[in-house]
Image (cartoon, rainbow, N blue to C red; front, side):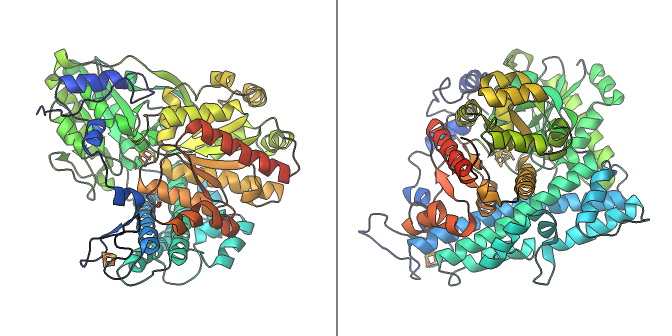
Length: 633
Ligand code: XCC
Ligand code: SF4
């Protein structure tokens, strides 16, 4: 249904990415609203919310603190701005950690079923990685079958969620550097069980429990550590074992990957369990034939957001866009089905799809969208269900409004799939060449750039600008999530992009034949960045805060990003945020997060919306770290 569009979007100015502006214009002509339109309708956004000083945690409220000090300074219960801001942030961390880790839980379930042979559609693909994981978890693998080893691994990992004792998380103990573990032990923030820490966040923030901002934030640290070093880590490990550890793979990215004469299916969400199947089934001869019967040349699968990254790094499925482009893909008029699992799915997809022929297919019992077709995915019937979904898409091809199809032609070449294993292989099997390049200063440092899009920021502008500014300064950029897709669409993920890098980084990239920006996968794959950091620190005999590294989330929006940012900081990383988090209502919390936390954990947050300034500061931080290591600057 066409809608009245109250505010027009300055289409050519809201994005750095080619094709986006054209589709926003098309949307307006056709009476379709996008996130940018709704963002304008939301202006001005609530000042209390932006500052983090509204509380709805009990029904004496909602309570708001007057940021100017003239009105109320406390809620009905007496909670002040510090308590309220800290509690709100803790709840964001809890939600983010829950999203990542619940995703991990689903993967463990399938992994276990693959191990026992119960889920016939899945198998253990990377057995080397399975054995490696078993060994670091302390499992004796001598004489055991793959299935036995996997079952034991699954048993330990299942317990990570809810084991009843106070022992630290096993996967964290197996993967985090010893020096870090000591720091966390001293602070009393070693996580015990993933669900428990998340549950405790909810308990502490309930009316009348924890009122001390420092204590609240430290629990946030603990919860985020459970996410990074166990929940997300587990999702990465097990996805690699099930579907293969990513290796460099070539494809293209941007809306131009949609094909006019083909049935286009977009997989969107986060979990690879279904998206990998859809990609596999869609490419089968049977489905390609069926598509021809319906007048198409075949079936084309494209990705969106992180499930898009999962199939990109393993199968070379081209991403059609990142977070803010999900509606635009439908607005092309050329998408027969968008198959979603969970996280980062705008409920508006159904409204937009209503103006075209696209079917939005939800598949997860925990993620329904009113108006979507719901086909519940069950791993025991993976192939059947994937087939059913692909068929629906194919049959929908005949309903495509041909006269309204417009696919922007733009797409860029991409090499993605840099797992830690792939990076090691590119380096010739050891970290030594990278360490030497860092030590000599050929590469000045490494920055992990991750995270979303946010209409508060010019779409992809901060991702791309910050990245270019960093590589120009001989800083190797690694990253995940929607950053990865932004970098892909802007040509930063090709070996040729080395031309945009400083002399030193350029030489290293050219010798190794790698891009100056390495796409490591989806958001849960930020765990791969942790592994790299840990390995570098251990190899150099230092702790992570000593390394010339930093993190950045230039356009973040999701609560998962808050959890990621926090575990980066807790792991000792200087972490830049390009969008202001809702903490400014409390000077105390702001100071804790952007300053004092560094004394405790070695990392801290740094907030700067301007990507050029941010790059400059990050560079300076890296130079300081180099000086402390007595490395040339
Ligand atoms: Fe953010 Fe994580 Fe979502 Fe993209 S998909 S919008 S969380 S970057 Ni992972
Ligand atoms: Fe208000 Fe306190 Fe209730 Fe929050 S917990 S809504 S501040 S009374």
